[in-house]
Amino acid sequence: MPSKIPADSPVKPTRLPVPDDGGSVVLERRTQKVKPPQMYQVVMLNDDYTPMEFVVVVIQEFFGKDREQATQIMLKIHLDGKGVCGVYSKDVAATKVDQVLDAAAKAGHPLQCVSEPVD
Ligand code: TYC
Image 1 (cartoon, helix red, strand yellow):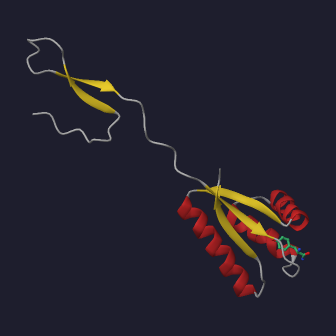
Image 2 (cartoon, rainbow, N blue to C red; image 1 turned 180 degrees about the horizontal axis):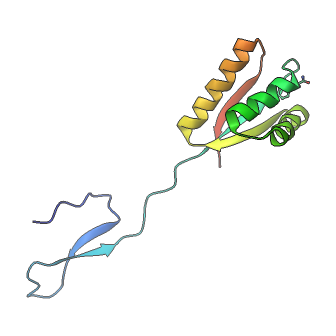
Image 3 (tube, rainbow, N blue to C red; image 1 turned 30 degrees about the horizontal axis):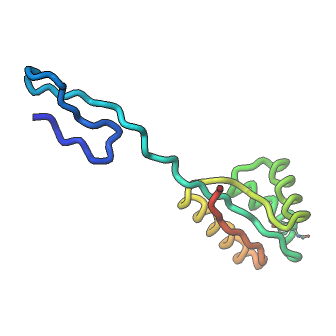
């Protein structure tokens, strides 16, 4: 007895259209319905008080950027008001936000960041 195939499987069992198929089952491919997961970008916001050096270190530490990349991102945030530090799955993005807010609060800086779905 073949094991049961889940309803959302990309294949479905089909009986062969011949009278004497001996109960054979073929697997017919269905159109794939699974979509890639929604991704989230972590956006850091500018403020007038957090030191540039602190932002650079945070971006290096939590977003895996080298000093040069981190400095470019920090300057973009400083000039444009906000900037993307990285793109992650929902849970990882939420963890990055928590880590940044925690580090900022501990250091006494008002640095803010948020995660938002990528279109
Ligand atoms: N604007 C801050 C300053 O002039 C630097 C800064 C950059 C703060 C990026 C926050 O996300 C930020 N000290």
